[in-house]
Amino acid sequence: MTDATFLARAADAPEPAADGNPGRTPTYTRAEPDARRLSLIEACARVLARSGSSGASVRAIAQEAGVSAGLIGHHFGGVDALVAATYAHIDATVTATLDDVLAQAGAAPRARLEAFVTASFAAPIADPALLATWIAFWGLVGARTDIARQHDEQYAGYRARLEALLADCGVAAGQLRLSAIAIAALVDGLWLELCLSPGCFSAAEAGAIARRHIDALTSPDRE
Amino acid sequence: MTDATFLARAADAPEPAADGNPGRTPTYTRAEPDARRLSLIEACARVLARSGSSGASVRAIAQEAGVSAGLIGHHFGGVDALVAATYAHIDATVTATLDDVLAQAGAAPRARLEAFVTASFAAPIADPALLATWIAFWGLVGARTDIARQHDEQYAGYRARLEALLADCGVAAGQLRLSAIAIAALVDGLWLELCLSPGCFSAAEAGAIARRHIDALTSPDRE
DNA sequence: CCCGTTGTTGTACGATCGTTCAACAAGATC
DNA sequence: GATCTTGTTGAACGATCGTACAACAACGGG
Image 1 (tube, protein in one colour):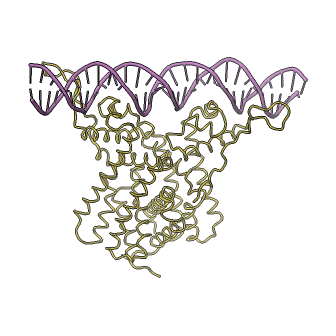
Image 2 (tube, each protein chain N blue to C red):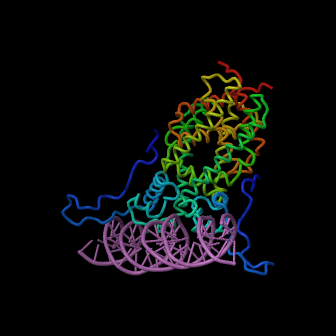
Image 3 (spheres, rainbow over the protein chains, first blue to last red):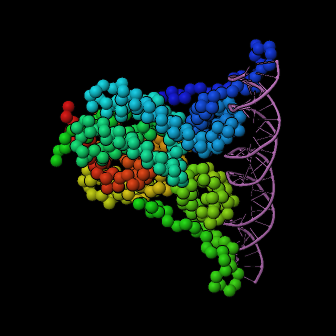
């Protein structure tokens, strides 16, 4: 459905075999450290999406990126740091995507909130590779305290943005916190099942559900 | 918070050291195959909760259960089958818990729906060990098609139960499917963050959010 | 009390894991 | 074109992985 929209390339290395070039064939190509790191991060995300956490070994990621295994240690110091960098990169990608969505949205508070929420159901956020990386990190939350703290901070930041958008929509200050938690949970659940069981419901239906929920939260209470 | 309510025991093996018994000390104790399998399943869930998917090795699980590593191969044939059995056991536990909740609930449709939903925010469903097992299996959905099919079936079954409860509450047939998806997503999101970030909000607040959402879904539309 | 069944142990094996490091070479600098 | 910097390789290393298997022992039935 939303397949292969987040990361498309399969390998970055050129053909090592001889081509039309009559002289020597370069055995490898150098790259800027930042560019190589990004290439390895993207390869890590692809392996995570294809094989899961258990299959994300140093050699598998290096083969996916078309480089040798030792290069990961050279650029990241270890595979743990590479996985952490992959999570940070995906987090930054999602944040930037949501920033763009808000920038392109108009000034109407309700439209901004809807655009912010429904963006989670389309590319590049609703993507199997992105979900696989997220799940890999959820699995680390219970084991590593630093990952747990990173999750808490990011989750709090997401809720804070939701609270600001809700406040602009006229939601009372006393209901701001729980309303943001509710929308965050609904979006998380819809996004999760949208990626895990793509055939169950569509992104448009997820958006309709979210809009209906926003209607209920922004309308005055009955009691 | 809800710690250690799902699985409490730490080891099943008796003390191998000499006690008051003057004669020989048994080097190990036999167990019924079913009892031993259950013991290994519970140990697997504990290791999954403590160390994550990557730490759930044969030796770690066997040490947690107080038995030798080879016993897992004898009873399950391999570690993959043990993890799958752990998932099946936890799924059965959740289903049985929800059955009990519905059995103890009264006949009022709205009360039955609320009881069914809010049960996910209390023990034994809202439990770190249970979440860890669930996350480990989410990580396998993208890699193994049989796990993906198992997830689809279980998710469809959960939504079917929600649809029946919603129909009893008077929800129109045309809105039944999306309403069940909405509630399932909200409950999943709340349950997930309740386990990942226990300090963010309480189980009572999660229940309040869910009840408010049910109010909106069961009340007639404004247009 | 002996004996058969079988749950259990512990070792052994090959494969793969993450990491290290000396040697190599691609590209920039002068 | 010589030289330097450094990104890159590939072969090691020890540790740990999952699995297989023969020997052992606990418990029930004779």
